Amino acid sequence: MPSSSNCSCDKDIIAMAIHYYEQELAIARPGDASWKTLELPVEDVTDDMIFYNKQFYIITYAGVLIVCNIGDDLDSAKLTIVPIKAFGLLCSYSESSCFEEHKYLVEWLGELVLVIRVLTDPWDDYENKEVQARKIPPSTMYKR
Image (cartoon, rainbow, N blue to C red):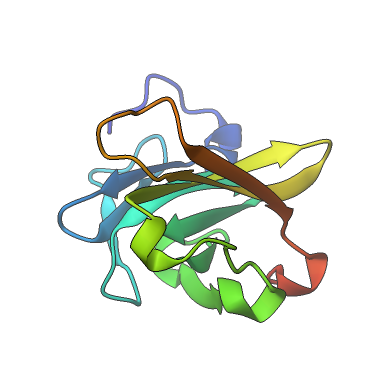
């Protein structure tokens, strides 16, 4: 990733990409020759990710929250796993009534929130769905 600027502030810029089918993440900064691949610490696919409080937060399809603390050196990136069950995010539907669910991480009013959208009818993408939103408690946040 060639950089058009030699600004010392480039170390404050970072990008992360999801390799969905490979179950990997990639990170890079301006001026890096290539992307650094990070393997997920669980065998799962990524549903969503967000940059919040100077860290990346990743949510997997199975509901595992992964916190990525990068620091100054991309090689020192640390992935920490926090299962959703650890902070009471259990859905109220039964598996037999759930066709598909999607998880989204959003920042809302300065808080990190997990939104779960449940589709219960495989033929109707707009009806019969349940949406839950839960604040992710600060106690689960990785401390630098």
